[in-house]
Image 1: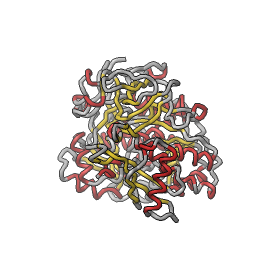
Image 2: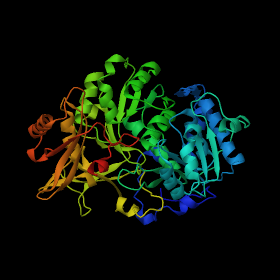
Image 3: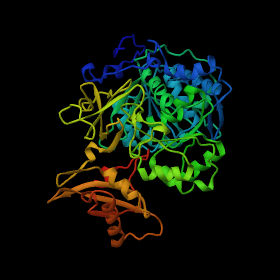
Image 4: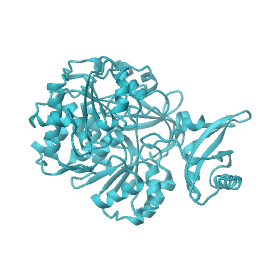
Length: 544
């Protein structure tokens, strides 16, 4: 299957015209039979229309939310009505980019499907983005339309003044009870519940996902209809083994591709249900598990660690699978969760550029400290600085290829992410003799001290095993004699004092469990750690 074999449905070719040159795109492989999609496919229709019209799941619950439960048929009807509003009232043509802005709720889900059914390109943004950040996204993607939760209107209205391409907006009311004047809900009410889906090609762009910007200005990653289907038919099929009776819940926003897959696309692919909650805390997530009988959980390591001590207050017997991604899963966190629930967390690494998880494991294949092996449909290896594969046991650059891959929107950084057909994720990994991959650090987070390579996450994992440590972050800071030294930023649990004695105790703890050269020569106590909206630790802010 080549990069482009079919006639595009896009009348607006802005995004397609800004795909990287074929020579700078990765090699795509389609080894699994289920990845051979027809030339004409609309992923929204494949996931939602077929669920109702062919699979007969119309009466099943698709979404549980504060506004009530939505069946598959009701979600389809809402998406169709919104698609009509977009095309009939707002002038959307295939290929236009549409900004979506909302917390996780049923209207956001319906809007996502509506945009793609109408042939648009969806650009979902994190709810906490401010006007300046929104301007960066809107200008980069030349966005013309926006569907926004009315509670998040202020920042978008501020941004609008600097975005001449953004001319068509409509506001909706999320999980609030009553639609406002001239709202999207009012427009929907005047439309039929049917819609003729745009006949898109499998390699038409349907999604631009922006990276979180933890290492610089966010990049727009472009994904095709076939890419969306591929992530639904890889990890949840071979590794997670999601079932139609599952009820999924979690913390990642739908604007984060980890959340988009786990919280919306994967459940609908198999006829399962998802619980969308606009704002979750550890205790509220556990309460939701109890009340909704959640069976599959998606969240970040930080949440698992915070929930572990509270599990006993809730009935979590319904849980059967727990997935972690977004940042490295510490061994101590996995052990804490297993002791609290009896469930072994399924760890995974993905990337916005790759759309979702590409290395993981089943519960039966866990190896302590390892992320896992490439999931079915993907290949991975460790490359040296010369671009050649390294032998087992060597630390180098993680390289991946599969049915998805990096296509930046008009960005020179494409050349740094793709090399000789491989996607270079920016992670330093080690692969053992059995093919298990062990995370070391982000390649730009490797600490080189007196000639030793030290992975910050390994030191963090060790510190988290100390009973006084609630959270921590480890970075390298400049040092005249050693080049860099290890510095740890530590949040202590209640009842522990952030003094010199505690700092010495933590240093001795690391020396006693890791090679002595890895211990943090500097320790700074913090009351909070800088994290992105998706829970990733922002180490660049620790470095100052």
